[in-house]
Length: 492
Image (cartoon, rainbow, N blue to C red; front, side, top):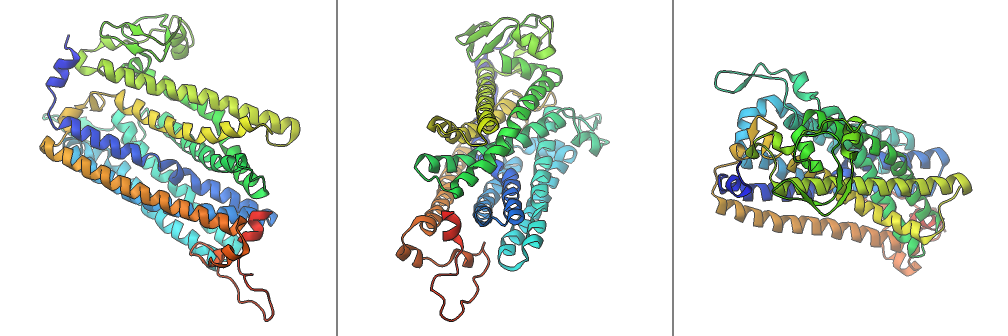
């Protein structure tokens, strides 16, 4: 049996920096994905409420969220483009051999990306020029474009986890590609719906968390109440659904990628009546140190009965499975997801109970503290989901077909380390600019809503910004400063 050190000694020198660069850029990009996928729909829900009820506060929130959506999308263009180049630059072995099989997913994602850019531009323009309901209906395709983008990227990733839709020639190269089978692989359904609902949950909790912080700081107006309630309600409705989808996805991994499942659950030897370990660390002899051991639970969760046989890591040679460290990382990431998901169900039940009993939000500050933390916790689980999927698949970049070491570029390791340093500096600047723009918008909106008359007068009317309708000329004798509807909306 090969040791971890022996396995690492046989890997190319450029593999580590290539992995680190891909991990860093993907980890940063994925923080933006929930807002790219879900914020358009949440914004349209608020927009529809505003039009249907004649609610100026809801329209104000929708318009402001559309501005954040546009800024986020611009940053996503940068980070997404970098990732697209990295697939070819860092992993030419995979793209050169398998690109014709699974590349359609990336093509779909690219078309969806451009379509979403056009639709966002129309939606922002519509605040200024279009009739209210015409503007709304032209925004309806936005969430569909976002879902199409998610469709493309998950189709590619699910194929990497369960490659299908091809045969091999005498040299081992793929031929006779079946596009339908290559897209709709066994892992596509569980992975896609789990991913999409996770994005909507995360965006809902993060947006609601912003207004929960405002509530904790004493801003108890209708603007903050509505800004909290709509996205939080969307997120809490989806929370129990996501828990079931996550369970279904884990069971799909159990059937289709048994070695990855063994890494996620720290199962060393194939057996029945397998215990469940919450956290803990896998040792080289197959024992688990630390953590909470629950007898037979892993077999029960996998097959609904203690006699279910669970495949262990030792069912395959050491160089065909994750290392001890990789298995522990995948296990911790999976357990963090499960723990956060369980806590969010409790938070959703708390919210539902209060609304059912009192038709009102819970009044305790602990609820709003928990709601404020929920958004950050969801972002952590998004990262953990990616770690579980990618680290648990090691050493394969295409499961059981191509190793990561076979796909990596032959560029010198020193050059890749330099490139990683440059990418980190650029990303710090890009995300710093994103944060600065969002904070500046927040400050401007706060002044418009709560500031003094002198401070408001120093700002141009919010309706004259690129994402708002133009203000109408005032009739003779009208008071100055009447072009903006933001002050009355924020104070309602």
